[in-house]
Image 1 (cartoon, rainbow, N blue to C red):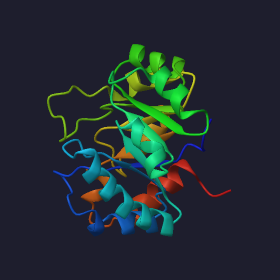
Image 2 (tube, rainbow, N blue to C red; image 1 turned 45 degrees about the vertical axis):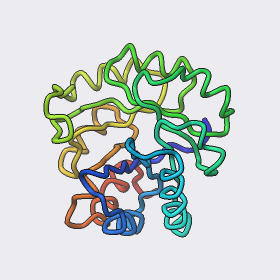
Image 3 (spheres, rainbow, N blue to C red; image 1 turned 135 degrees about the vertical axis):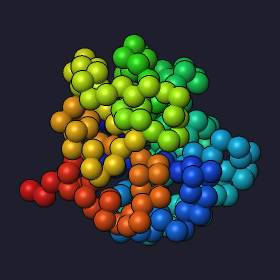
Length: 207
């Protein structure tokens, strides 16, 4: 595996939390280490400019940047890797281009898609939505029983995504999640530091 699977994967959303400075430093202070920069509406030049600004904040805290859906920018940004949306490109080709040392993960919404992603060489997948989520209210929640069944059939780490909170994260862990991926669960929280501390402790308890 290219890098150790983090317990938390922070995901940006320009519509939900446009001001990253209002929550990212606090999240990093709480132990978050990996940020997935999702900015679908930006051209590459604008995306790279924002990514460079975020890298300075991340690296100062020992954090890492993951590019979203733009594998061609990984080397240019010296990012740790890329996360691909479900079915966007051939993951095996991306893995070949990136090499074994770069992070590669993929969004998945069913068991078959997750199996294909791992067969193509991803380091991890997100399965969503585990719980009902405001981001996609039309999407039925998988629920912990289905999530657990799917995780048991997969050969690698799975992040729980969708409606995850500090309160229900223990259910995700019990269902087999290796970590959690969050948008508003952190960026819209009253205390992002406390949220990240709690989730990190849950998935990476002190020895």
